Length: 306
Image (cartoon, rainbow, N blue to C red; front, side, top):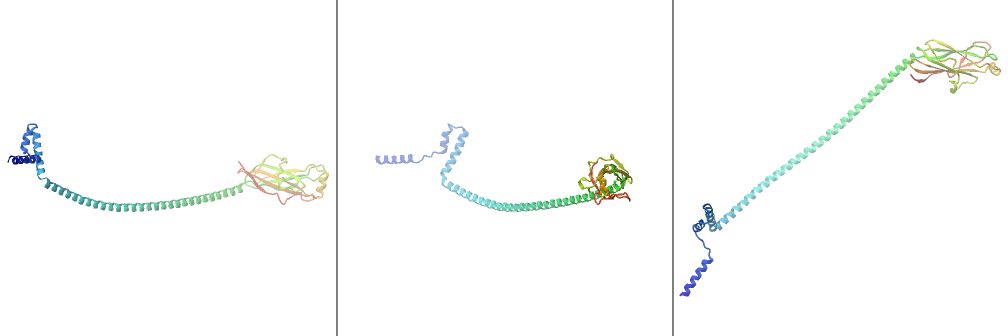
């Protein structure tokens, strides 16, 4: 009997050691009160109660918690789905707005390009119009200037001095050892005086050429002088004392040429010159006047100076 009772006691002791020992909360709290303050004891008491509740209801609570987590996850997925849909809609709307903005930008760029092209064409047309106007004004100014210059030139030509030889006469008879003299009558047929008149002249049995019609080597018989409008002036020239060969040539009716150039200036400060050439052929009797050569009786402008 003792052995059976001892075995039963050992079995109970083993079960008591293996099983957890749950002591009443009040007992634990009473044991702890001796060490903690009242606030600590109250917190620990509440926490022990919660733990006890959790230990007792651990499985139902876990199921409830898992259910709530699943519901929260599903609700989160639903919200995320809706947000994703909204974001997708907004993204599409933004894409459409972006396309519209791009189209509007391209349209504005095209309009700007058209505006630039129109401005360029307008500028070219304006430049062409201005150039045409300027050319027209220049042509008109040139035409007016040409007309004015022509009018001034005509007025000057009408008012200027015109000096030339109007008559050439023999003033002595050809005699051996004497000079044969000629008188040249100059006339100013213009309306203003001729100033700084200077005559270069010479005589020769050879017909003059262009290079010697203005014999600068000849010493002028007079210094520079003036001829009033409508007035005349007589200048004299002659040969060297005649020798027999010269006299024989004259008697044989060999022509003697008297030629030269008259230089003068008009009141408009323009330099003019007149060339002259006359032919003398010996005659026993008759008019002592000389004939003019077929050339070298011209008036021309030498230079313009002030």
